[in-house]
Length: 233
Image (cartoon, rainbow, N blue to C red):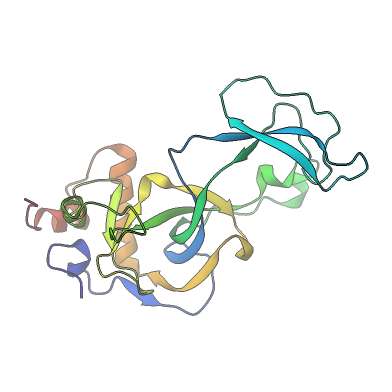
């Protein structure tokens, strides 16, 4: 049961179990989510450990500075090819729940992709990640007063929910402003046996439109439900 001061409480059914492992919008998955806001580190090639060994080399780690000159690509490592003006970055992240917000566009026909790198036209999914709210010493979590406000729909980029996969009762926050792409392949995500209902997706669409446009349409079901929730202290 959802609490009375949440949007989900007034939707007949928010999550539904679905064992078919498809990649449609509204599907709950797990994916590798990058930490946003941390200082980026660049891997700078130093050389091979042995001249004939192409699978091993030495790198140094330094802060990534936008526009900084690229070091010369001498004695490259075959396992990590680098073209001009490219960089390797050391980025931290975590394997966490995420929601498929968009299943992407249709696949581009092969005859229109010939001669183009696959990554330029390959289909992708757009995901939004969930972050646990609990402050239990193992994670930073979120302040309870802030979570109360998010649960009442006060922010366009945060959506509170309790996921149907177990875990903390305090719930999770969906970050709609953290949308990121992954290849539209089963190997890119772990598909979980749950998805949002059409009613829940309609609310989420209104929420996302609020974020994208900066304006909340007062005629939507989401706006109506939000107005009826108690104001957070």
